[in-house]
Length: 310
Image (cartoon, rainbow, N blue to C red):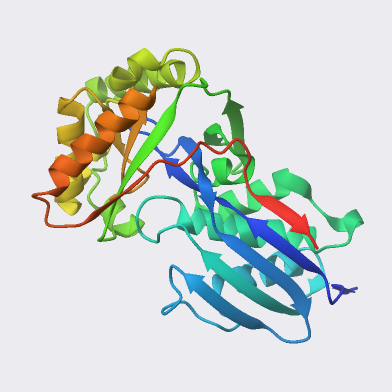
C-alpha cells in the first residue's frame, strides 16, 4: 500500500563542498570543505524552484530538477507517493570544478528525502550514503559530503559501499585555486589509460599510505604523500593551465593536487605561512595565465550534510 508524505514540512539542508582523490587516493579519498550549498525545501501540493548562485540561469526550475527528481525517487523506492517540492537553492559550490557539486546535490536530495519521511520509515545516515554512492557510482566525493572530515571509502564485493573517517591533524589547512573555466568529470576520466605499469601502481600505493599518515599525524610529509602516479599526469592534456599551476606549486615544495576531476587545484598546508606561500605562488602564476583564478581558504568541515527542521 502506497503511503503519503505529510504536506507543509519545511527543512534546510546544507551539504559541504568536497575535494576527492587528494592526489594518490584515486576514487577512495575525500575531504570535506567548509563552504556549503543551502537548500530550503518544503513539501507542498505543487513543485516550484527558485535558484541563486551557480546554475541559476541554466538548471531546470520544475520537477526535472535533480534534487526534486531524486527526492521523489527515494520516496518511491520506500513505498511513498511523491508530493510537490518547493525548493529554494542557494548554490555556492562551483559547478564542473572538481569540488563535489554533484555529490552535494545528490546527498542533499537523499538527506532531505529521508528527513521528510515519517520517523519510523527513515533509513538514517547509512541509507543516505548507500543511495548517494550508488547514484554517483563511486563513494570518494559522497562519503565526506555525508560524514564530513577525511574519508577513506571503497566499493564492496556485493556492490555496497563502505567508508571510514580518519581524524585530521589540527594543523592541516586547504588552499583552493578555482579557475574560471570548468571541466566535466566525463572529460577528465576519458583521458585515463585502461592500464598502468605495476611499478607505478606500487609507488601510488606507497604515496596514498604516506598521505594518510601526513593528514592524520605528520603534515611535514604532505609533499611526498601527495605524489600521484595514477591520473594527474594523464589528465594534464585536458586541463593544461591547472597542470602548469600544479607543477609550479610543487616546484615550490607545496603539496598541491588536482581537486577531484579538476580543474581546481588544492594545496594542503600545515600553517599560516603555508597558506601565504600557496597564495603568493598562485597569484604569481595567475599574472601570466590564460584563465582567471579565484583563491579560497576554507576551513575543513568536520560535519557532513546538515538538516535543520523548521
